[in-house]
Amino acid sequence: RHGIRAVECALGRGVGQHGLCKMGCGDWNDGMDRVGAAGKGESVWLTWFAGLTLRRFSMVCEAMGDPQRACRYRDTADSLVRAAEQCWDGDWFLRGYFDSGVALGSKYSSECRIDSISQSFAALVSADREKVRRGLTWADAMLIDPQSGTVALLSPPFDGKGPNPGYISDYRPGNRENGGQYTHAAVWLALAWFRMGDPDRGWQVLKTLLPEHHPLETYQGEPFVLAADVCRQTGKEGTAGWTWYTGAAGWYWRVAVQELLGIRFRAGRLYLEPQLPEGWQEYQASLQLERGTLEIQVVLGQKDRLLLDEKPISQGIVCENLTGSHSLRLEILRKRGCATDENHV
Image 1: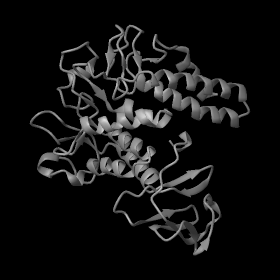
Image 2: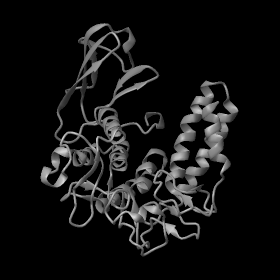
Image 3: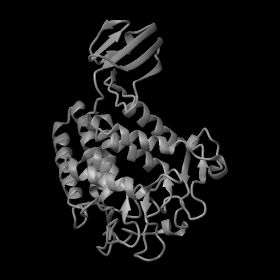
Image 4: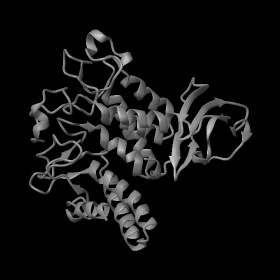
């Protein structure tokens, strides 16, 4: 019931003239608090997110015996996703629209020409995989800087040349959300590539974010924890800000474990669905269970098979039945692409 009230609150705000969720005084990027302050601005990212949430929550409604609500939420989700898919700018998806109707995140914009999260979340809900891949490819090209080892949130930064987006422009260009690396969003870019079945690009983004690849004299943060943001300001490229950021670390762990290693739980069952990048022949992991330990090994082999304590077994292991020490070995004939079921998010 609490979830329903939250969903209905969001839906009650309605959509704008492009059929998108209204931005209000900021969406995930709260620094964009002037984009929709007058009540007309719209957010492509929020529309992707709402569609994803509605699709997933509709399954909760089904499980709770409310099929009519589940159907309504699915229909609404489909409508929102279609509206977001129309916000294609030729090479990537827009970020949204200002109250004035001016596009945000367009190739014609003087600031924020491309925004990372509009491309990343498209990979989680849109069926137009060709456009999603093109948008992600441009995001890689325009937002990843190999020299500083950073993945920017948007580019170019806001610097007063266009409509006022809000307090995000109070940050100097290249700092925090204003064109710096905001690590949550950078991890979502990796997530998107894994969902597109491209583990090489996904792993490349994850590697780029690791502090160990940054020279300490530049990074100036602890070399063993993720930072909330990494600077892209001219002369300060690669300098960490706000380390020990648990949200960024949590998302990194989730993408690395669930997408790269493919260790997933669904409905209480364990599945191994790895996406090994080029050059990876195997990995090992140890999973602590409630009443024991499961040693996992994934290797490229001569055929596809899954062995529990050296005996063939099907995917979907009920781990609560395991006590003591056990071994689980997955042999795969080839690299596997990940399913795009939104249940996996």
